[in-house]
Structure formats: structure tokens, C-alpha cells
Image 1 (cartoon, one colour):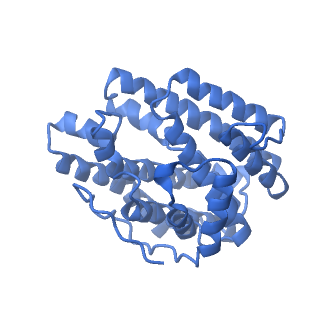
Image 2: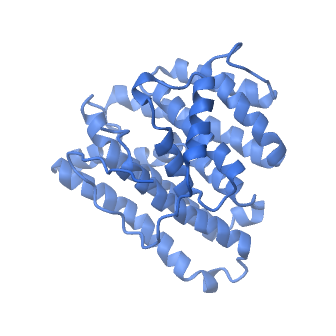
Length: 311
């Protein structure tokens, strides 16, 4: 599949992460199913007619190693997250928290909602939840619920700063990984491979590697989304924060943002290269998850370089 890279006012530098991109399978069927699903749940807006192929290509790059069945659910989950993020961006705290209350009511009570008796996001999350139940453990589903809470509350905090102006850098870094739904992405890496035990997931090295991926994910997002946000005077972006902090040009601020992400890439690379000494007990499952983190970091950049989402 060929994707033309979009030309932006400033092309961010390529990230410093010397791992190959995932090899995407043919996504024709995956894209067709995503489009059918999104239209069924009334989650297609006219300006997005239609990026199903791009979403499918992106998830197939990030999760190239999983089965067709699981890739289908991952792709729908990522599309759902993008859709909810778009709807809640600029909304009031009450609006976003109402979304959260409705989501929690559905997943905590295993409610079945259809397009005939619910809103688009309600029928979509109900459909996803019912699909995940036979394929996941109760613990994974508990963490899925927590990911929704942390993500949407992160969006509320992000929106508060849109009224107050650019947040302090430290505060922004603290909440940004949550408002980007990185916890949901980590769950999808487990879902694509194998669920990890609490001991493995809580290992100091694994926590650091996950944190590096999360920081990379949102920082790269910021580097590519700043132009669209600047056009509406949105300062809740690391590029805008760096531009103000260093009194520098947008070009320099974008470079600083990618350099920020590269610091976490360097941390990830060092741990990966020294894994035998640092974690000799790490087995096939641990390494598969780490490879999933690598694929996500590369695939995330691939998506933004190929996407017109922020033009």
C-alpha cells in the first residue's frame, strides 16, 4: 500500500530510534471492516470520507505481529479513541465527564447498547467491550476501565489549560501521557501478544520502557499537531511551550520537541541493548512485549508522517 507523505509548514526531524518499521500486511479487508463498523455506529464525519485505509495501515504497522481477529479489534479501538478525542476536544468538563459516566455505566454493567438505543460512542464501546470479554481476563478489563478514566480525566485537565493558557512544562508532561490515551495503547500491545503478570508488568525495567514509549507517543503527536492547534490559538502543546520558554522560532521549538522525545528513545535503546545483563530472566513473553513497544514507537511516527490528520 502506498501512502503519500503530507507536506506541512515544518517537517519534524526523523526520530532517533534505529529499529525497523513494522511490515504491514494487506489491509484491504481490515479497512473495509473498519469502515463498515464506523458507519454502523454512526462514527463517520463528512470530512473523514474516509481514512479507513490509513487507520488500518497504521495499526497494521504498530501491531503487525498479531492475528487478524485481534488486529481488527485493536484498529476499531484506536479509531474509537481518535473519534472520542475529536468530539471532546474543546468541550466543557461536564460534557467530557458525562461521556465518561456513560462509558463506565456500559462497561461496569456489561450493557449492550446498539445504534438504535444509544449514542455513537455508546454503541461502539459496548460493541468493543462485548468483543473483548471472551478474549481477555477480568484483570485486563479492569485496567481497560481504568484507562478510560485516566484518559478522559486527562482530557478535562488539558481543556482547563486551554482557558488558562500554556501550562508549566512540568505539569504538562505529567498529564499529557494520560490525555493521549497511552494506557489504552499499552493494553492493546498486551492484547496483541499475551497478557503480562503483575510481576512482569511491574518490573522496574518494564515500567521504564513503557514510560519511554508513552513519552515518545505524545511528544511526536505534539510535533505534528502544533500547526493545526496554533491556527486556533491552542497553546496546550509542547511546541508552544518550548517556543514561549526559549523565545525561539516554531522550527526550533519543533526540533526541541523531537529532541525531547529522542531522550526517551535513547533510554529505551540503552535498556534494550543491555537487557541480557539487566534482566536475564526476561523470556519470550517479555521480549515480545518489548518488541511491541518498539513497533508502536516507529509506527506512531509513521502514522503522523503519512497522515493528513493535522493539516
